[in-house]
Each structure stands twice: as structure tokens, then as C-alpha cells.
Length: 79
Image (cartoon, rainbow, N blue to C red):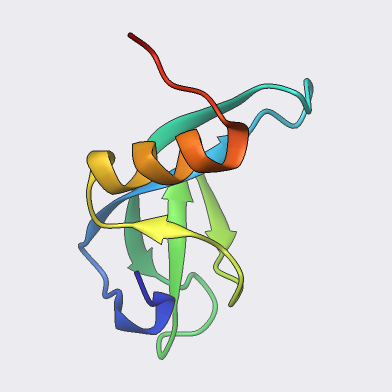
């Protein structure tokens, strides 16, 4: 998903690495919200926190797309 095409109110999925355990990653649902400091921009709201969206952040419109990317990145598939 092109991050420039997301808008406030969109429900998205991201691959989120645990900051306390870097080798652990999960697919998490998040919401696109108005940027808290810039009304002309959006941010990711995840785990009760705002996260700025960088150009290289991978944001997926569906769980299935996020799961496919996760499996490709981590070479992992469940039976």
C-alpha cells in the first residue's frame, strides 16, 4: 500500500517489531489518524501511541497482505 494513499479513519495492518525483544515481530492492526501536531498529515495509532509514518514503512490494507509480506520477510509459514 502506498503510504501516501492512506487517510484518517483507515484501518491498516503493520508488521511491528517488539522494541524490547527485537527478534519478535507480529502483525498488528492499527488506525490511521490525524497527525497530532500537523493537521495536514496523518500518523499511525498503535498500542495507544502515535507513530509517524515514514516513506519506507510498510502499511497493508488487509491482514492477508500483511501476512504474505511477513512470510516473505521472515521466510515463515504456518501449516
